[in-house]
Image (tube, rainbow, N blue to C red):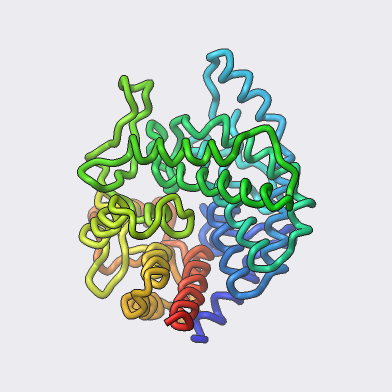
Length: 382
């Protein structure tokens, strides 16, 4: 393994609190929290690296954190049943302090994001598959059922996307995580590894998949945003939004669609045309202005993950090599790099607001670890 691989494992371990939570970035105050989304991918990386104890402690932290606020779900159901608006703090939050408390002092932050809740259930199922730790499921039955009930109530509602933006829309990526949650938990229930609940999970997973296919596709590819039906007569893709690199997740890892699905082939091809620099990194989306819109380490690894699964090993290795060249002298991988900005005029404003780009970003290191392991498996299967 490369020095960066070992360094990545070390940085992740150092960034895990005694509570089990993974800090998003130890050197970037705005990211001094644990996001369920980031943390779930970090836990999956640790599972891929056979660091099962680290992932297990994280899943327990998620479970206890969700149960701490589970009474909110009764109120959400009441509000939905009676047409009462849902406030920003009525929902389950997307980020927490490392001891599992909601972050409420920043009124501008978008708390309502569902993708982290779908991702933690997918990652938990993967943990069990990779580690054989079936006992963990029984220890987490309550938060599993709580999360499934929550997702069943809210998946059709507009909410913030995985980049904390556009709360006015529904998002194909976020729905993919919900599909994966329903599908993976249904499989575990079919295997009698966890007790069933009253939600028809397989049926619901197919409903989510059909919703994506019906409302997110335009010109043969998947758009990142969907206008909810309350804004127009029928939900429809937001064509001007184009693609987003996170939508690789619809194939890998959430398996909403197979890699040979024509819509996803066209979506990946558009991501490659619009967002992949030749021999370089991957942008989030064309209109990105965050820190000037640089190339993201974690998305570069994510595309490489897809390439490895497709047997495109040489292309995956090109992306791995690019990531390794971005390592700082401290052995850190940042959130993004700024050599080829999409919106350079916006860089200075973010620098003045929050300081230098987050480095290290644990999610960047996690996706690199995943990529290295996926390339290794692909080579073994040649």
